[in-house]
Figure: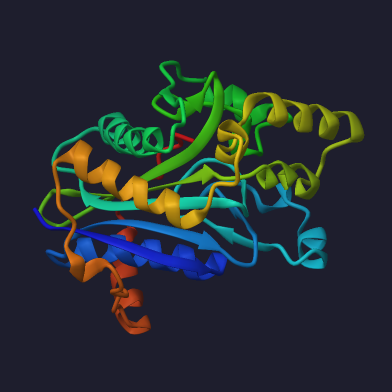
Length: 277
């Protein structure tokens, strides 16, 4: 099986989400190679889960402070993407379950992160998402840790979500992406959540400080985007026993807007996003 690696650098929120969707669309329509991608966001952006109510975000404040707002094709809750490395994996599921794929991706990330010296581990428990989403902290992804997510001493480092699409041949295409925190800027999500009173906002800020961690804080030095992307690439190669095709190093998706519109018709019958964030 051929795998491509793509480091696409920094893009707007809309460009990043369109790119990930197109990777899934290519696999739906053809025998395109599976892809592991790393990218950043500029300007900073808040992404919402597929089913999340946009009213949970203070759009006027986002506009005033230059924060993009975009909806992810996957489930989960709101994330402020700023000082982070974002990964995405677009692949054929090959009969693997949601949690199996989630675990295997996390194991590859863990192997790469340990090369940096980060003492990371996988979470074993699973929250009750309906109860979580009804809580005042439910609007923010990093307010909880799900099974097979990556943490350091119980503090969440990586938040991820997965979606699957049905192919005509019965196979499923997996799109999974997630945020690997490099700094503390993700905590500012609280400032852009609507409908919270002062006490709720203060409580959520405290929860995020207590229950999340970033690589720079954990390692006691500034961690850079490119060094993380490099070790994570090796983590995938070593854990999965693959060798990335060089074709994907600088290649762009080549789906035109017309092709993308045609492919979107195939997504209508797809399954709902899995809320594994």
